[in-house]
Length: 254
Image (spheres, rainbow, N blue to C red):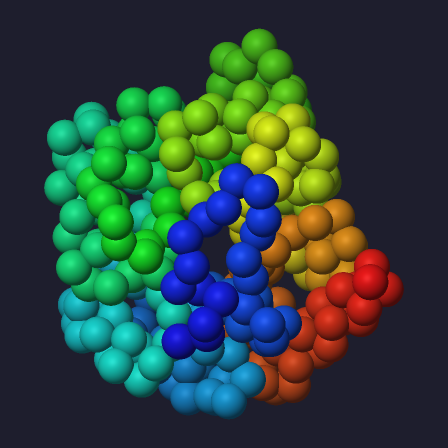
């Protein structure tokens, strides 16, 4: 496991892995466990952090896949997107701790976040709050009955996540991660960014997207990438290209 993942979140400093490759999280968004296993094999030596989302969580053998990935030294981002009563969330987070999950997501409701943080206890697992899904824009939120746009809602939930004790949030590069840390008054807030595509790639169903370089330049800590890598003719080469763009953006900031 990359050393940077086993450090408690600081309110004054973000502790990140030394290697940029350890900040790329590949989303294993498959319906089939064997497809996921094969993708992990094809990325061995390049990527060691994988997101397990809802597609796989309902598949037979999911528990075995999670155990296999951990035994092989990989890091796990369990994208559970928990949205339930605090008691249920608490029990689920405690189970994830026992499974040695590294990151887990809950929705940005105050009671849900506080229940998750309490259930994590002194474990090394990081609680990430979902702000606004990158498939939603202002028009989508208005249709759902929200009185504010995506950026304002993200800002509100970022502040609440910090107040609730979360380690990080999920936010797009368009949400300006560096600005979010200032608004939330937490320099140590970790930010994982989905909706990342290399230049000229298809947007798919994402509405707030950025290139790897743009995301890192805006202050994103971890990039979560699925289809652009999974559907590439050479996933290992594509993952390497993502990492190179991330490294170049970080070097430009130094």
